[in-house]
Length: 135
Image 1 (cartoon, one colour):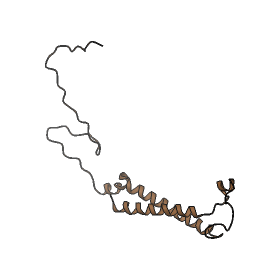
Image 2 (cartoon, rainbow, N blue to C red; image 1 turned 120 degrees about the vertical axis):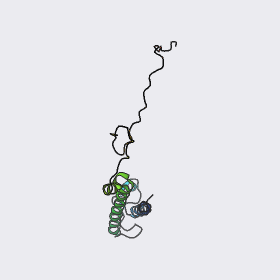
Image 3 (cartoon, rainbow, N blue to C red; image 1 turned 60 degrees about the horizontal axis):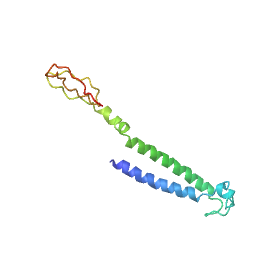
Image 4 (cartoon, one colour; image 1 turned 30 degrees about the vertical axis):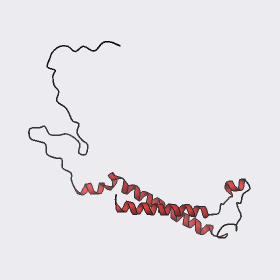
């Protein structure tokens, strides 16, 4: 496992936890479900940090979400072997192993294993084979 994947995964977990905490601290705008059942909702100064913290928490939420999405995309790109190896495979060319002498050249696609064929043999006797009977 790459060091970058480990570091980005740890950052992803930290940002996820911070984003959850930031969202939980925010004041509900319209009361939501709590207001419908008579709970606290809509009061301006009954939040944990006062009445004007919505602006700072909104900015923190948007910033945390942007970092969360960027980390998710970076982890997806680093973890996908075809995208991560695309840059490496353009620098080096892959050569197929040489076929043994006397054999036909392989027409298999590089990276895909060729199907193995077994030689066909004819039966030693020429008696017709009868299927088993019964039930």
